[in-house]
Amino acid sequence: MEKADKRYRAYVAVLEEELIPAMGCTEPIAIALAAARARDLAGGVPDRMELEVSGSIVKNAKSVVVPHTGGLKGIEAAAAAGAVAGDAGAWLEVIAHVDDNAIERIVRYLDTTPIEVRRADTDLDFDLVVHAYRNEGGATHSGTVRIAEYHTNIVCEHQDGVVLREVPVASDGQTAEGLTDRSLLSMEGIWDFATTVDIDDIRDVIGRQIACNSAIAEEGLSGNWGANIGSVLLASYGDDVKTRACAWAAAGSDARMSGCELPVVINSGSGNQGLTASMPIIVYARELGSSEEELYRALVLSNLTAIHQKTGIGRLSAFCGAVCAGAAAGAGIAYLNGGGYKDAVHAVVNALSIVSGIVCDGAKPSCAAKIAMSVNAGILGYEMYRAGQQFYDGDGIVKKGVENTIGNVCRVGRDGMRATNDEIIRIMLGN
Image 1 (cartoon, rainbow, N blue to C red):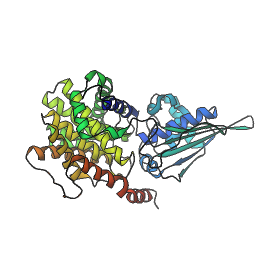
Image 2 (image 1 turned 60 degrees about the horizontal axis):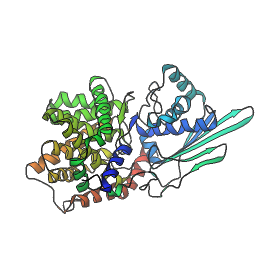
Image 3 (image 1 turned 135 degrees about the vertical axis):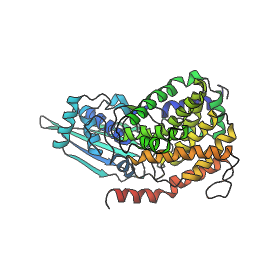
Image 4 (image 1 turned 120 degrees about the vertical axis):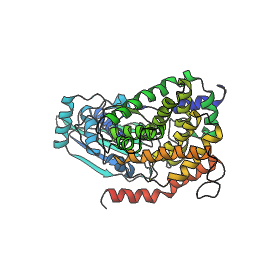
């Protein structure tokens, strides 16, 4: 792809927008970000807070440990951490530098401060509002912040009732303000870009992903985190490259779901998807002795393929995002093994055919096991095609042409599983 092609700059921009570092599970971290900004608008640590959150935010913030809180879980803990010690200017690393003294204040604040959480009346899957109130000298100061569509998209800010920022929100959640046009993505374009991009144009963003995600995956394997899926895989199935690819991705997830205080470079707003799209590629590159350039190109291919799929589904849904990232990893592994475009896209189609039924029932330790299964499907999808096997047009949701199959999967994840998402949320809330 020539640099003059408008897609070239767009693809670079998409990687820069999506592959950003985050400390902890991204939904509670977005809550902490909103709370930190609302505190700033209110002029100090609030005396009480009210939160309105969409059902999918509830689902993904309910059961994970919030980093730097001494092991606290949930929406209230995330809001307290942001309000007491958050740095709103650090975005998704908003509570990355909390010290022990601040942790004590967060715990005390959570025990003594009214924090009301209610489900928002919204059509958006990603929608959260934090209202912060602070009394001073008989006067009440307030700050309100709304984040919608994606984790750093602050669309509304009020200070003492005065509107400082108000950005219209698209009703479908697919065309967020400020993001590069994702409709320019296609598998053909992604392959062309990945195999020709000037490495210097993506070196920083991909290099950061390699460093951060490798570090937390290694910690997940060496420590005792969550369900220890990575360690279980290696102990049960051996240390071959296929098992390692699944294990390293799963181990990083187990660590971050359980409060590990190391950052992850995310993909499509998700640290789990960032790990799934990257760690199998890194493991295979080590095994194959791939060059740095080959590793970077494979990661570009995998990351953009994951983003392409998730664009049509949305940030949050009942469709497990690890499925898309695992299929994308299959494409990257195909490239590292010397495969061409057909190998990569058939790996994606085959993988989607295998595991598209996995549901998302929130962020928690079982995500690591779902990641392992999704990576395994991506590898199997590639190995199938290499062995002369594939799924064909008419096999369930598979259609001739990779874009048509991706379109069908997006339709299932975005539209078909909306009722499933609502039912999962009701189950998790005990309704």
